Length: 305
Image (cartoon, rainbow, N blue to C red; front, side):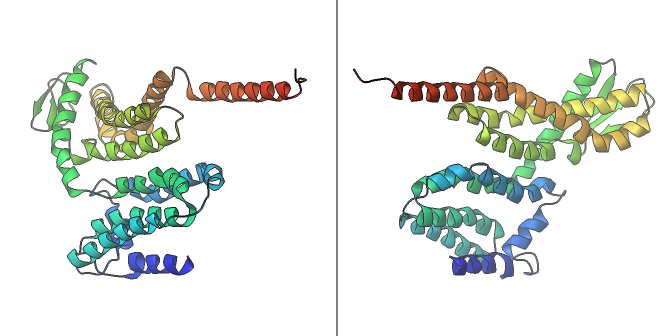
């Protein structure tokens, strides 16, 4: 097991074959790809989230350890084939895609199917950490959508504007035209919120279809939350300090407005699906479980007829 781990670390960390001048390993390429140009700064949190999800269910995982299966080796071999394809085609993304297969298949081989089943989401959740160039094409559409929402939303607060492409200009205010740039499109917020909603759905105690719905809510919530953030910039620029709105507030509004707003809406969605606040429902489930246990124990002391 130690030898296999060492081989895995070698190929993913010390086999330098990727990058423009072939000076990056698969792991170092991924780390360098988690940057603001690809809107994946949050990617560096993924390893910690994956470890946290496994620790969260560690007791359950440990309780179902059983005899392994050679089917696990077949799955791990699929991951090896993907790495081989990446090695030959110089495509590090394919190597990263194969890593969960290797780890998941190894768990199946060592500790049995039930353990592998419980590790499915935490391991393959890492796929969300792989930057996809084609996904960046959505930036243009989100820019136009954010521009339209900011224009119409600002009107609800009495801020009259007109639009030129992705620029929003005031009709009466004295603030400079604001360009809904790539960073304001919402793609960065969307990717981060997808990570949060996926982890949230995994730990939620609800039916599978409800978990899927909770995860998919990240898309409209990210768009709505980003629109609110941009609208707040225009409102402050119109009625307050335009320079402060387009600099300080622009830089901090994501942390101070977007994420609290989006997380509160995620909580509201979770509560609606579960019929109440999650922690109150959890307390009721625990109380019901204790009551049933005590009832069963009291029955065991009754004399047999």
